Length: 218
Length: 233
Image (cartoon, chains in turn orange, red):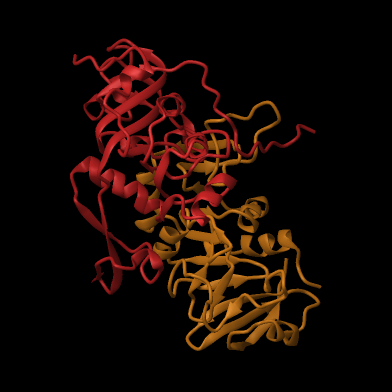
């Protein structure tokens, strides 16, 4: 059976390594913070200027001056720090952040990503996404395999305005874990109960099945 | 000590005119110069170019200026959560330039630090890079971005002293320190204005040299955009 959003987040959490500084985008990526393996230490960076982000505050303890990039009230953990936006993007552009997890509307088989604009329909802006994808060396995209109309979001070439070029390395959806390879997507893992055929059917870009393809384990 | 204090917001905004370019601190509604924005509405200034990460919500922050159609052009990185903004943008009433958030911060910092322009990898290969000079460094393509050129920077800090030294709180810091000194005149509003010598020089986030005018605001609303909490049970 396909994973739900929490399942996707739980699988991505397996990409976290001890000592990582991690930037989580809005949506499914935010949920990754709920599944940090017990034996490792990671710190979450939010590009509006906090490192060491903690859980949501208890009711009545929220502080308007302490929010994340999704404008949600948050708390900080021991060892946290606040900083200005230029410093925040120095961490990102300067490759001090080890892992970036973000959502996408489309990903191409060459690692292009589109997630900020649908011409004529939706223009919210890129926020920090263009800076993140242009500099991060370790980018994982968390998204559903198809859009609401059932159309594949994994394409030969993106149709929407790009956020970044050739930057995505790994994609985790409700159906599969895929890498971006030299000649197309490489299917590495399938969700429990999902067949390889099902994944191929909803992947519009070229897809190769890895020799050691396996079922995701949790 | 060079005293930067003014007593009212109207005194602080002396010289601000129609058609000027303003830079405003804040991320969402966090750390926005509430008092200066209210004064801009009262002054009924028009044809403004506003540089700010976001454009407020419908009835708060820069959304108040949008309602009065005071903004001619908006330079921002993210403008969701604002129906009036979307309407004015799609109808062509307002010009909008969307730029990457790190580029926005750095264009302010470059203006503050005296750099005319800088190269960044952000936006290469996207519509953000269209018409801009690009150049390869160490095998990677970069886009040339220019420093902002603004008339006023409107800043919100937590504490400040008479000399214009500033301390920020939490994530209300955001773009505020980068915009200080990045415009011809920097106006700062603080929740608490103290005498020179009351703040520890070791703890100052922005030195007073970047600030021309400082005043204390009252009754900050500090509206929360997304109140998210967990239960104690």
